[in-house]
Length: 563
Image (cartoon, rainbow, N blue to C red; front, side, top):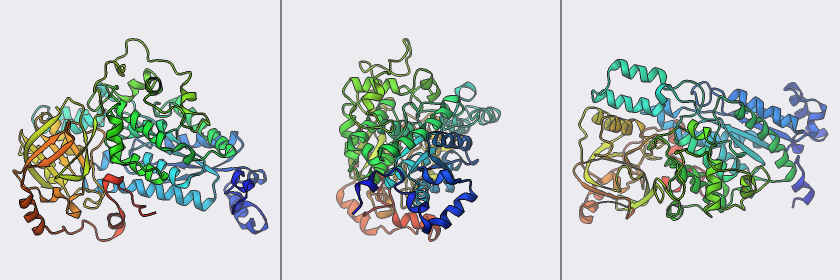
């Protein structure tokens, strides 16, 4: 049994690595990387950097990590920098490489756990800047339960004519439809991404950064700073200082990651009109924290929380424009004052959410980016969990109301994203179709690819309000239109989506929260008897390993199950 002194020791972990005669070899090794005598008596704080030059989202994080180290050292700790991987959703989108995207979330969480555990860090800062390394960092924080702060790498500045990456995907569809010329398409390509930072709308990166701030794992306003800014560098420095304080105070992530905290995160995601990926990732983070969160919690909370922020992809504004009016802190204060947030939740500041928000003011007069509660964009959540004979374990739709609240059409079935995208670009998909993309789930993909290429092609061809798209894969935060993803069980395990055929009637009703086909139960049973599993995409390597381990999207698509 551990003594109280051991439990409260700020060097609870590092002393096992560097104290005493027995650990002389460890100290010898650490001297070579810059440790001096005094450093061995300080709390050791790891800084997990997701720097990489493979994507603009993370290309600047190396310098941010150095700022975090400066903060750690200034507060009396000893900062130690280490790296983990990242991959780019925007670059791999629409290609076989996208199969590795969700896989990378698990690799990132595992690698941070591995380094922090092996090195005996007393706490750590994790800096993430893209769709999967943000939740991957948060999962590691929850799993390790050592004092930690997450820092968001920040959003990108707008491109020419307020363009962003989604503008490029939709331009591809517009070119296929003959609406723009090849030179116009090239101009969009050359001007949409002006430099470092995460994709500029309320897509997955900005959604998850906001959710993690609402959880209490980031310092206030960390989610609402541009990647290239003095405020972001200062955020990193203060995060380094904050972790040292958390170590000294004995505040650990699971003191913060309560059920109420997850309800706060869901509330903020809904108010911002955030990505469907937030459902998948919050379920996964909750799993690592030992909090029982379910799909139906999103429905329960969504009934009373409105959509307030008019942000892309379905809205008009970019994250940088929300930053200019104060970020998400005034929104959170509005929600708190309305009784929609739990103000008693602890945060990494060492104070409660209500205490953090006490001095936060309202948005500037005349802005129309964030609506008042009395005039919402939508009176309840845009994240709609659907059930029915197509998705017995659930599916997640993003229904803002602009697409309508119901769709009924005939299935046009594709086994895989590439075939569907080409059919859309070739004009095969017609108004009234329900595009079905299957065998793209966590196991079947494997990796649950995002469908930004087909949804971008649909919008570019002007079919956004004329067709629906359903899939056992998922969607980029930049996807919009009448789309339903995360259909569970997935096709690869014999879910009903595997039984659909061209021409089958499909009904999607966001009000009744249903997705079903009117094909008879007896016919579906006959098809099931004839169904055979497909040959796996990969039989070795990380994709095969992932496919063996991963669970259902309805439970967060986690690989660390049964614990």
